[in-house]
Amino acid sequence: MSALQDLIVVELTSEFWSGVGAALLADFGATVVRIEALGAAARECAGGWDAEAELAQRNKRSVSVDLGSEAGRDVVRELVAGAQVFVTDWPLANLTEIGLDYTHLCKHRPDLIYARGSGFGPLGPDRDLPAIDELAAARTGMMPILPQPGQPPVYAGAGQMYTAVMLALGVSIALHHWRETGEGQEVDVSLLAGNMYGASLDLQAFLAMGGERFLRPVSRLDAGNPMSGVLYPSADGRWVCLTMPDTDRWWPGLAKLVDLAVDDPRFATHDKRCGENRLLMMQVLEEKFRAKSAEHWKRVLTEQGLSADVIEAFDFPAADPQVLTNRYIVELERPGVGKVKSLGFPVFMSETPARLDRGAPALGQHTAQILHDLLGYSEDRIRELRASGAIG
Image: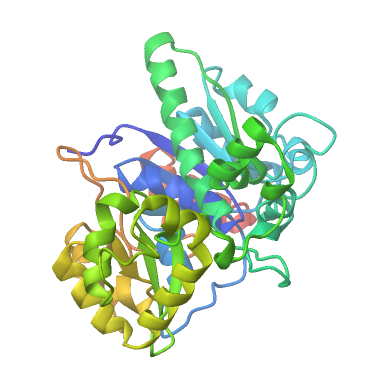
């Protein structure tokens, strides 16, 4: 059983992140009909398959329509009339111009859930700015504090993925309301809000306390606790991260691990470790960690059950048994390519799990099937529309 198996979603998006938001609904059983512009360029593929589309468009059906023609737009409006949800990330002016804005579509489906991914929200003077993640991230205050002091701001690129999940969440909440009351509504999730929530801990702390220290990057040597959130380089250039805020609890085990005496008078109390001898302790720990490889530290930290780990690159989750067991990465069989890996499912459900029924569709692959199955179009009607150029 799939949790959203009775849900029909019509999607008109152009950005990766909003496509992922709709794909999350498809992963849990929704029928997501993706509207693609007739004559759209073929997707670029690497290694024989389109890795980006495999994530953003999986489990969807593709209908190719000429949105420049009234007949094509009528097809979309009919599809929306038979759906519960419409998902888009198009600019409001473009949607209004072709009659696919909320006001127009509600004439065809009064209880419609109209979900839009925007750049800066549905209200205010910047509501019409383009939905570009870098621009939204630039406003959140996070980019200047990510690097070490003296380095340029860092664009992490994660805000759009927070926004994708919020898009699926917003639709799910609206669906609950729809099932309880029969009322539809507008849902807007913006890249600005997604990036702000990605910076929640720091931004919330600034809202609570203010102060200059939240506005500038902090050197790793300025950390208040040498055993918590501090990175130390290993002999092979990789980094070890310690996460032991309660130093009284963790110090005996760490001291033994790095060949320091537990009762070393320089570090014998929490106040000394995090106060008067904080910088000295960092210097000593850095020398200790530099002496051996990251693999050594990973092994002994795990053996001793200490709260620490080695900073990994992408090759680690790609082969991690924990990741594969939980289906955070899945293996796929693709014709002509063989086995490939793709991101899996971030939500575990014991009774209604996510599933991968189909890979990303080719452009317009399901046009005739969807028009027949969902709208009841005859073969003759489909041929007429195709001959007129309204559909692909």
